[in-house]
Amino acid sequence: FDDRYRQAQALRDRRQPFTFVLVGRFRESKGQEVAVRALARVVGRFPDTRLLLVGGAGQTGDQSYFNHCREVVDRPGVADRVEFWGYVPDPERAFLAADVALLCSPNEAMGRVTVEAMSSCRAVIGYDGGGTSELIDPGRTGLLYRGDADALADCMVRYIESPETARDHGEAGWHLAKSRHTTETYARQVHEVIRRAANSE
Image (cartoon, rainbow, N blue to C red; front, side, top):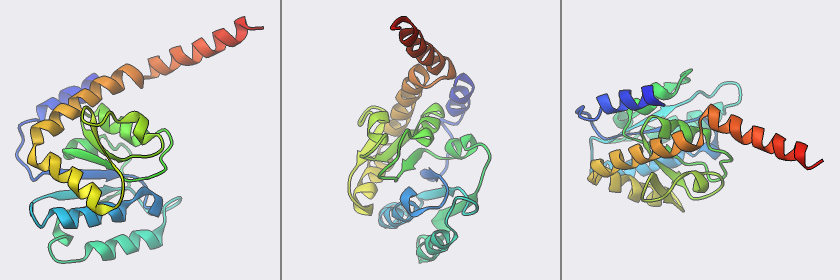
């Protein structure tokens, strides 16, 4: 956590187009198409905005959905604003390359990607459902949306217009994730469950 914090702080003053990232295997349930369609709405007002799609289509991914997303991207004003990174073994590099992470899955369980983004001091815009709603504190560590690409685009615009808010939310998310989602914290919680179970017999 501390190493990622230092890396994130070193990048605070860099100059680059405002960049969003979505990490996950290509499946319809992950919402890459929603992210692309939201970006298409955003670039009309903020043409330099970028979107990084990080994840593969092999193995548990969906090649036909990946191909469909490529077709959706292939349109004027959008094609040159989306980067397909493919599979990367450690998504930390992708999170640090962006300003804000997107989580567009409406039925996410624990939301490991959300926590990984927070550990890299990145605010998260997530769909208001499943485990994502429990991980993001809206207005403090990120934003939640319900609905389609229009609702997501509205949240994206809020951060583009106020990048300092995105940075503040990212830092608050880092503190929250560090307090809740370290290996040591999980180990203590598991130990406590075992201790209580043993004492109840």
